[in-house]
Image 1 (cartoon, helix red, strand yellow):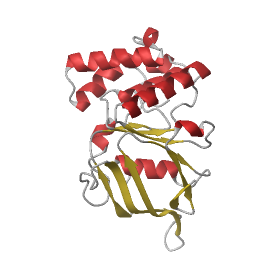
Image 2 (tube, rainbow, N blue to C red):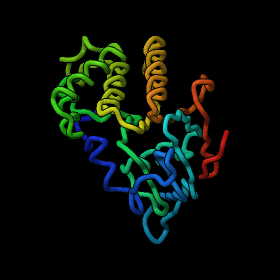
Image 3 (tube, rainbow, N blue to C red):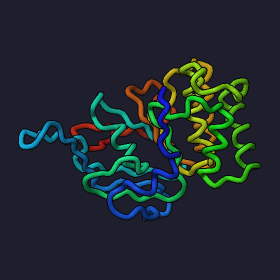
Length: 237
């Protein structure tokens, strides 16, 4: 855990993409990446080395679609997701989206001294939710993921699994049209893992979209399709 806190997801999503962030062009497309590239520079000039990670990624997410994003370690999955949410700038390419984005990073970023309730209150204000809406959404999340007994527990006293629930819950709080999840069920027990998929199914039925990063996919039937990052590009699996 860390005591440093990044801005809540919605605050991030407006500042770090390449090109204008505009509504997606097709009526049923809620998120689209076109020609996204990213390379990392290592070392000191003039011996600096450039390592391409993304080499022109094209990806679309339709309303009510659940998509898995897979690939080997270092293939650029987390890099792409950070670009989609606006946490990282691409070198070239465009991101277009329609609706609110909810983002669950791989590593929870929380205030160690705040309780779960206080985290929801903080993120609710960042999202511009009314107090009543925030409390109602928080209550549903506690019930769905089964951690209401930790409502008044500080983040630095939560187990890894409960911290993962809080991390996911904060992404869900504003009922986003598009949910971006980076290894969201790390640390979940089997019961919570099943609850997670029930929650995903409910979002699909409500016309919400979910993009899930996973190192391996064991429940392929739960996805509408799976995309693999290979050689810096997104290809059907």
